[in-house]
Image 1 (cartoon, rainbow, N blue to C red):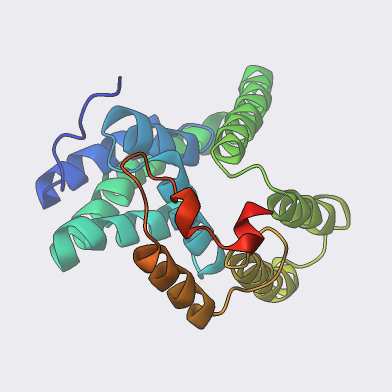
Image 2: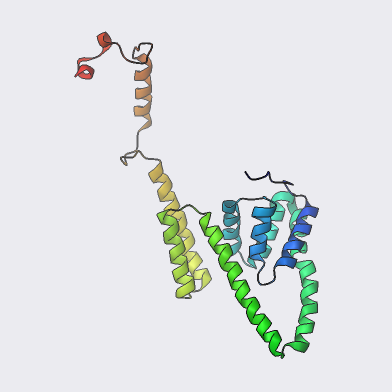
Amino acid sequence: MNSPREPFPPPAGRLFTEFSRMGLSGFGGVMPFVRRAIVERNRWMDDREFAELFSIAQVLPGPNVVNISLMLGYRYAGLRGAVCAFSGLVLVPMVLILVIASIYAHYSNLAFVRHMLQGMMAVSAGLVLATGIRMALAQPRTVRAAIMGGGALLAIGILRLPLVSVMAVMIPTGIAMEAWAMRRAARTPLGVAVPPSAVRQDAAAAELEPQTEDGTVPDAMRSPKDSA
């Protein structure tokens, strides 16, 4: 059984320290560490909530992780929380990256440095793939989800179409499919909507119909149609 989310909602100082930790842990890609910290370690969100937040961050301008830090910080601690989460994510790593960049400028021509960077690229790809699989497993297993996910993979991963163009088509399509599914779920299994008047008539008939103690209708009160 999962432990309760603590602290919740996180204060601004907690957001700063946690996002600083995420930024410092994110060698080869920050997103896997952001998901692990938010969903698994601190339990501020579950997988589905994080996937929804990531979806919004994906379609907004700017880096996904920065968008998540701003939205999550503002959600739990207001404007102060957004500033603290953003500062924690970029401030300390920025100083560290400037130091590493100056060192790399002097030693980038060395063979072992190039091999080290190639290994980091493989690790980065594996982390991103693992995060994508975990987020996909948390989504509902429906035909609509398979169509939308497969369409996005085909358009962006294989055909390499522009992200903005794909989002302009996929987002309205996903909203329309979800609205259609909600209308379908509101109908009976036979696919025919039940009018409210029919529901009220059935309820009134059930109240007026005499019953015995075991809930059955006495034989003397049954109509010929019910007896048949």
